Image (tube, rainbow, N blue to C red; front, side, top):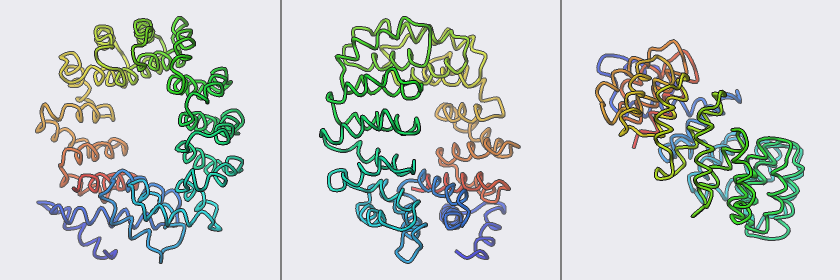
Amino acid sequence: MTRGDYAAALGGCKRAGGPDRKLLVALAEALLERDARSLDAQTQRGAFVQLGFAGKNARAVLSRLAAKSEPRSLRAPALSALTRLGDKDARAELRLLSSAPEAQVVDLAFAALDPARDHERLLAALLSPRQERRLAALAALGKAAPSTQVRLALAEAARLDPVPEGRVAALFALQAQGAEASDAVFTALDAENSSVRLAAIAVLARVDPARALTRLPDYLGAAPSQESLVAALALLQLTAAVENARAMQALSRALEADDAALRMRVAVLLRAIKPNLRDQAATRARLEKEPVAEVRLLLALALGTADPAAQASLRALAAGKDVVAVEALRELAALDPVSTRQQLGALLGSDNPQVRADAARALAQLHHLPELCGLLADPDANVRRAAAGAVLAAAA
């Protein structure tokens, strides 16, 4: 679609009655493909993020961007996105770019390397000065079969990678190495960086449940903290964990913490816990007095829309004009689709770009696409891309 054709179609889109579904999808594809071809890195990255959200519905656009006639700087992110969709041919093409002269292209291509066939290159990349290269190598090695060489290299990365993100990625990669990785993970429980400590707690429960049952309960008696919350969740997820009651008590105590961020973390974790293990009464009691809207939303989501208290809280939150209102409306859509659609439609006119973008995604998920036509010409580029990505994601 040429720029002139796009402008004409967009004009028709905004007239009374709006476009048909096919035209709206074509406009969304054209917008994202244009931005993906941008020489501005932020614009290109934003387009590929939305194409990634669209999943298999973005395959046609991604295939055009990945054509061999395109520059490597464009092919690499397109092939990477196709690889994540399970395209074996795209993975093979991306792997061939791992020897390209452009460093950023190689960073993306390393994610396509095979941990069995390319393990020497992946292990060498753990020492790369490029953070993106190391993270890609760690992600690939996280799928490697257990071996002493890989385990020792990952253990070293978990201790010595220059950035916390790398040390965390190394710990999660060690999961595939099984119980043999237990010592390296256990050592990281005392790491200086909190993100590394949290990762170690979660990973220890997966690689060595018996050892986790002897060590993680130590966190439960302390004052509420991120570590105590992750330890509690890890114990609750272990089969027949003997510390279930203490773990749930630790989470319930944290619901009463003065730190709103800690309460928010508990609310998020509650959704990962089996309903029969949750303290629903404590969650409901906190919901009734919680002053922070974001935490109220998460607590209501943990209880579910079938719970009267949660439903009442969601309706109150939905009356707002912010991103929390959008999320509350998304949850209430199954109960009152007509009213929800009207309220989300009104939020498309918000002065807040994030609210407009989130409302667009919510409407698309409810398969109400014509309302999004105007946002394809929104003054904010991120909103335009979000609307296009939402349309494309709902196109099937």
